[in-house]
Image 1 (cartoon, rainbow, N blue to C red):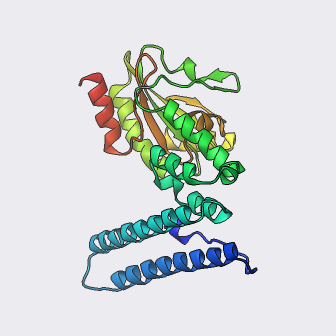
Image 2 (image 1 turned 90 degrees about the horizontal axis):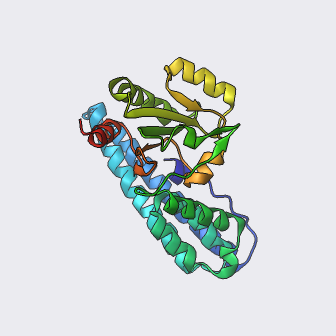
Image 3 (image 1 turned 30 degrees about the horizontal axis):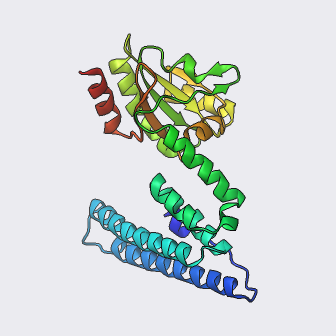
Length: 264
């Protein structure tokens, strides 16, 4: 519930924009409160199993997230010429497809599109376009090691962009390890790229998790800027020629993509 629970601090000064900000915050708080109350009621229902509780709370979350997204998009449209439009876009852009995110950016006034945040997101969206499935890989270099030292060299390569502090990243490692142990050979390999992480923490976690395949450590923002992502894990499959085969792989989809590519 990270997005919904995020606190939006608003100054209590007078003015039309500040009044709109206060109203937006109040609407957000109402959505969060309704979600919390509904989920708490489900959790207190002793007739439900833990699986049923999890499923019901998941449904409640999805409906709350949908309301939150609609609120943000409505707010962007109504505030194209002021910072509230940018604030609302900042809260919701991660949930939008690149094309839709671009559409809402283009709704903003030229002045608002020229803010540092919007410029950064536009650059990220451009990187996403250039690194969509079917596109050739984008090369980058970290401490003298190039991405192209591993990708585009005649093998399918599963690439995992991760960090030692990222719980979801670590939960995917067993799935990646299984694929590596099952399929690695003349036509397939695995590469882990550590981003946004302390190199020593990366090395320690890699040893603990049993990561024995190739690694690029200390990529920080270099890889994420090249591929336009702002959340991890990002797991992608690259073809022997370096073209991106599939992106956004998780859990069982990892092995399914590798099996399909290898024809096994």
